Length: 359
Image 1 (tube, helix red, strand yellow):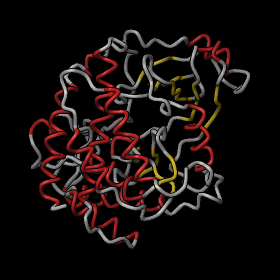
Image 2 (image 1 turned 180 degrees about the vertical axis):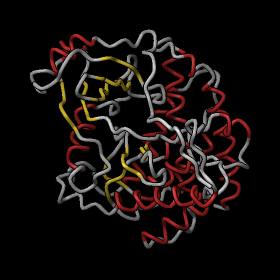
Image 3 (image 1 turned 30 degrees about the vertical axis):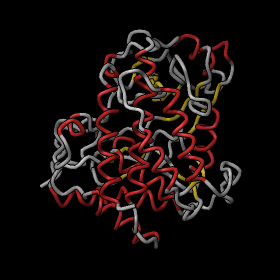
């Protein structure tokens, strides 16, 4: 039986040291754009994200979210607030799970960096530990999984031309560009205490697949980036974190999602760092996710291990880029202190899948 007694919407917490927000500057910039705002905002910060910083601005009559880049070294194409804002604004009319965009600021005199404001979607964000009061029985957990994959299918079937996003991509060769690009990023972000990933990088380059299709992809589609209805925790009412959305190969997008899909039988380190509750009884296994998605999209799931290796390698690069910032004291968030261990674990996992693939 599923229980949701006394459950509260996902809440932000105290702002982390060194990541304080100039609320007065934001308030002065925002009020001419939202003249009905009353009072000054109560500012809190969401702790879940390891990339862009996300704040809640709680006015007397409005509940808003501010997104801005982190301090420190940034990848060339990452943390583009204007792009993230524009993609969501274009998608919302045909994909209603996208938050409502309010305003975008590229004036560096306000916060010293671009940022945007969106409407908060109150609900449940299913992280590794479910909120107090929420219990999912196996049939409900399975239904949630299926609904999640259905939303991914729905996104991948959006007509990019009709929503004005056809120029967002770079044409055929997405898989090749991604494998080359993430390989370069890893080399730049490598620190002395992590593996080189050379075998994995060489294997991916040698076996790079042709694109199966080109569509709008999220590139970070997972359970802890969605918002669930408080009354029905299988109903998805919001999808968050669109910073890496683009036009690309849908199977690459699915491979990215599976990198975070930790199962109950995975090694204990991956279970410890899991960010979503995919280990619970009733949740689909990775192979079931692939089969269900491919059945909906009309793809053949042959040789999907290649996309799984790509997703894991890409995750290793993201983890290492975050650790690089911590290693060089560009962030003081203690949560990143041991990210180098995760990089090692992912390297071993990639090698295991390569041996299993038979390529």
